[in-house]
Image 1 (tube, one colour):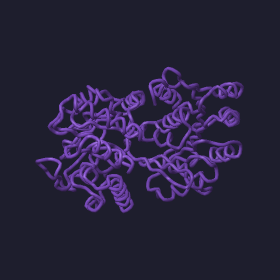
Image 2 (cartoon, helix red, strand yellow):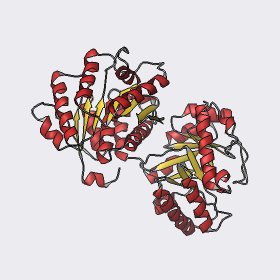
Image 3 (cartoon, helix red, strand yellow):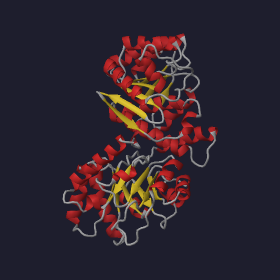
Amino acid sequence: MEKADRENPCLIHCITNPISINQTANAVLALGAKPIMAEHPLEVEEITKTASALLLNIGNISDVRMASMKISLKVANSKNIPVVLDAVGCACSALRKNFVSELFSEGKFAVIKGNYSEILAIGNDAYKDIGVDAKTGINEDDVKRAILKISSDTNAIVLATGKVDFIGFDGSVTEVSGGSEMLSSVTGTGCILGAVIATYLARENTLNSVVEACKFFKQCGEAAARNNAGNGTFIVNLIDALADRKITFDPTMYFITDSTIYEEDEFLSRVKAALDGGVTMVQLREKNKSTSEYIDLAKKVHALTSEYNVPLIIDDRVDVMLASGSEGVHVGAEDMPVKTARKIIGNNKILGATAKTVEAATKAYEDGADYLGVGAIYPTTTKVKTILTSTETLDAITKAVPIPVNAIGGLNSTNLGVLKGIDIAGICAVSAIMKADDPKRAAEELTDAFAELRRCQ
């Protein structure tokens, strides 16, 4: 969300439970919108008419809120205001489950949200659980089937939250991983996510808004948990992280450039082809250019990546990142310390780091890194000196830190099998795309190969 949102804040009407009402309001404020928590049946019609989004949260439900929700739902539908339903506790309470059914019969929703148990309860009349938290051991395929059934029945986007968020609409399910276990240790974080989604929908009522809201929230959870935060510190950090509005990113197909063997026009053409092929992040790596040359090229590459809404990461040089307006910087083991880089670039830029040991990975995470590059997995020709990293070390690093970990070093569409069973977030590629006869096709083949690797995990 842009800074201008704070200059013209939209109103988010939240009818929610008193357990999380303060945190929910603060989350909306942190995102640059205005919350109003009105719940009296005699005023909600007037207030909902002025809102840009409506959140209905059935936690700690009462007769008054039930009546108000029905009134506000009808008003929102008549004004085409997006409505988010957070079905808190419907797996453990017949009252709440029946009320959700009543709401479905009386109006429509942009998003229906719940944890795995709550979504299963909505999709299956016989399903029951205890308490408002999802039980462990739930089959994810069952959750996905319930999501698609509910979405088909209601024509709404359906979100099931958990270690992996599943977002279903129009017959397909999108997965969002990441986050921190601390999100389940503090009450109200799920309710906060409902408010975050409503605020995103107020700006743009699309499926992508829901996906981006979930990605952003998980990243905020990761940031809030750093430095061994306790429960009280974590919730304060979480609101702070929401206010920082860090750029969301998808590390699945991370493309690192090499301009040394191309004229500038050919180089830029290859970057554009890779973007056409679906790369999700681009890192500009220039070891031999002067500062002014590096900045000039960064601005040209950033103009391309911006067209595709793909973040541009600058290798090594914080000054070039700041001067070019790029979205982030990546620092190696021998570059600027991660903690120093974070202080300079602030909290709303992406910061990547290289790690070759569990100890280095843990320190980089604690010092503020948003993702890690780990390798080289295979020998590579992009650097004079290559130090290989074992897949055992890569696996240990993915288990040691809660931020995305990407494998790097000599990877191509034919040799990813060595990474099977390792929970990496994505792969980094240089030569496999940069030196390919057809960079677009090479990027597509790498993306398909990594998707197949994930399916086989």
